[in-house]
Length: 308
Ligand SMILES: [Zn+2]
Image 1 (spheres, rainbow, N blue to C red):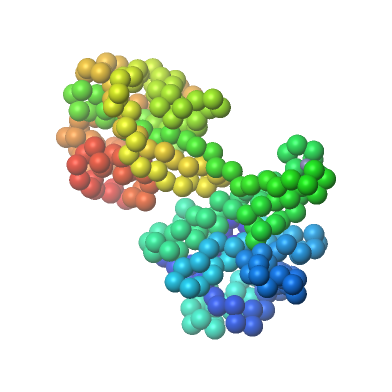
Image 2: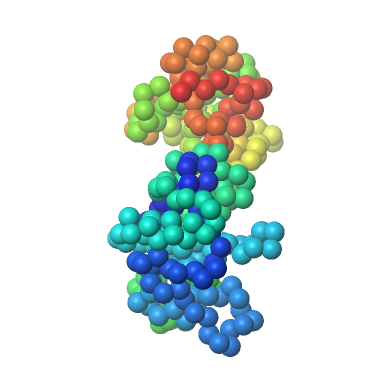
């Protein structure tokens, strides 16, 4: 990775190279050397890397089918072309060329393994980027445990990667309509499910009800089964976990009142209305890999057409 982008061979393949004679790209600095006595800690490859080598960082992602995967995270300040040249030389060994850099959002059609590696790498790299100092005492922190811990040497305590939960919900009423909103920063016509961060001291169900009330002035029912978990999606921008729900509004819901700040438009759709709006190009739905799309299509009952 270079900053928050991956070396790729087209939009559907990360460049994954074997470590054979791994000559680190020119800007990457030497590969970290484990201590001679660290043979029993094969994953702990960065423990003794001196501070001058950070960044770049070598971060352990996990193992699959007997292979260990590590991401080389280069700082945004590294020379991207020089780095890519180094990656291409490496990629040559694996008979797959590197032809550019893409962010996670630009990568489509990755297989399940690469999708998992990419999402995990982005989340880890984002965490390292903003935890270079201890949040309690301000001391510079060090990478430990192959990238899964940062260490405060002053307080001698470990800091762990964090995940920020957010809720995302398909709101439906008893007339079986779905509520979709348009956020202020979206392109014209984009409609999707409502979403928002969980606040301190709040349950997921409370977060669902509060966000819907705040964003569109609609009251979600609070009986058992009125807010139901449907699935989740890691969303490392920078560190979210999207927790998806179906939320019920009692009766046939009345008007919605978008807050005008986060949500500038919102409306109820029947299935026929949504299909017609999508086919006419009046409504652009979120992309197929998003949990928002999955929640909408679960309500709809089948896949909806894409209009771009
Ligand atoms: Zn500290």
